[in-house]
Image (cartoon, rainbow, N blue to C red; front, side, top):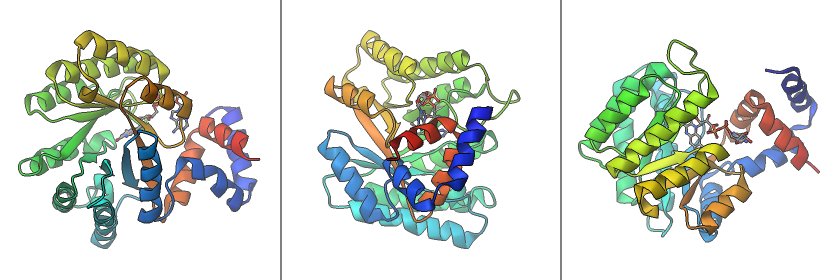
Amino acid sequence: MTAAGRALNGVLDVLPASVIRRAARRYLGGATVGEAVAVARSLAAAGMPATLAVVGEAAATPEYAGRHLRELLAVTDAVSGTDLDVRLGVKLTGLGLAFDPQLASTHLCSIAEAAAAAGCVVEVDMEQARYVDQTLDAVRAARRTLPNVQAVVQAELYRTAADVRALIADRIPARVVKGAYKEGPAHAYGRPEVIRDSYLDVVGQFLKAGLHVGVATHDEYLIFHVQRLAEQAGVSADAYEFQMLKGIKEQLRAALVGSGHPVRVTVNFGADAHKWSLRRLKENPEIVRHMLTSIR
Ligand SMILES: Cc1cc2nc3c(=O)[nH]c(=O)nc-3n(C[C@H](O)[C@H](O)[C@H](O)COP(=O)(O)OP(=O)(O)OC[C@H]3O[C@@H](n4cnc5c(N)ncnc54)[C@H](O)[C@@H]3O)c2cc1C
């Protein structure tokens, strides 16, 4: 982290929690399911469906994993019977992947069943490189009976090209991300331009295969080139969707919606959302800068 980044983080340490909470609100969907669903409603009114994601820690005990399962089931309950187009973002570590992959897989199936009944897709987030095999296995296992479960792939990983070929062969749609976990040269490309090339290649593969792809990025370069790729592939607007996090690049988001591109917004929420977001904020000095300029 640069000296400027460290200085910005130092500012976060001394600002009153209430001020930080107010500024972080722009990026979060509140503490409760009700608040998150209200955010999803207001996004829907502006032409954008949502992905709701309950933030939390990696589960270290079956009790924590069970609690997280119940939080996710509460989301499916809340959207069931509504006309909202809502997806669920699920992290398998929250459901016990680190200590019991079978438990996480079973919990994923419970969530996917409830989500299917509520008309929702479940996107299984991709986490650290050491979990990729288990995560893709859990997606495949769930999809034997629950086709509403979808995968995520990280463009930065060397292995992703092969994973994408296998997902396409199995007709599994996916969200594409750069990758958030700083994996290092044992697993991942480090140069931003290579990660971008990999990203565009992966999106192109899904479009060519006629499989729905979530283009999850705020990178203008990628957003520009994915539009070109979609035009060149001659696909309709329901073949892909841009996905962004709440509060980020809102003007670009609105412009995309205005020109007919589908855009879904991920809304992170939960009782621990504030603590969690503070940690994430500290990892990204750019967001801290955004936050500080939004404090008046
Ligand atoms: C909807 C969604 C789902 C995701 N799911 C996963 C996942 O399952 N697994 C995973 O490893 N990663 C996930 N990520 C994170 C992803 O891997 C990247 O770490 C993150 O999106 C930053 O990369 P970028 O493509 O936006 O490009 P960048 O080059 O990092 O960002 C482009 C510009 O966008 C702005 N920006 C980007 N991120 C932020 C932010 N958080 N706050 C404020 N401004 C920002 C900055 O202005 C930056 O200059 C997800 C991202 C999104 C948008």
